[in-house]
Image (cartoon, rainbow, N blue to C red):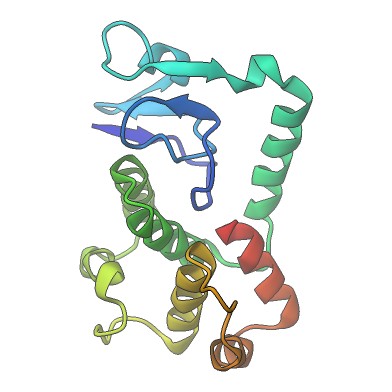
Length: 178
């Protein structure tokens, strides 16, 4: 099984490694952990592995790739704590149907001490008593921004998120979800 090295974050709108397999949606993969061994993505994409890379974005667009990595690293210093970022990443990955990303983010969450039962309950967070009001607001925000309704974000949802987060935190959380 594959899991990306920590230092990558964020839900999944596009792929840096445009892979022809499930899991192509993770946009910040640079290194992979395969069977406990940290290796470069290029080696993970070698002939021994069934995954192939269509385009090498870092070589084709190096300036944009560098800016993207800078953005990714800036997210680590955002107003959103690591536990909340991880829950958001897992939920967005579930919604996007990205098994690779779910696997990676769940493994990262375990490394950072997240409880196993909470990880199992992310998909059913509305029915679970294991999440705080702040976490529930972040998960609701993740869902609405991952699949924006035809008429935009409902005012009542925004107001419930605003009760739990400052404007700065909402902005940082929104960038995390993008």
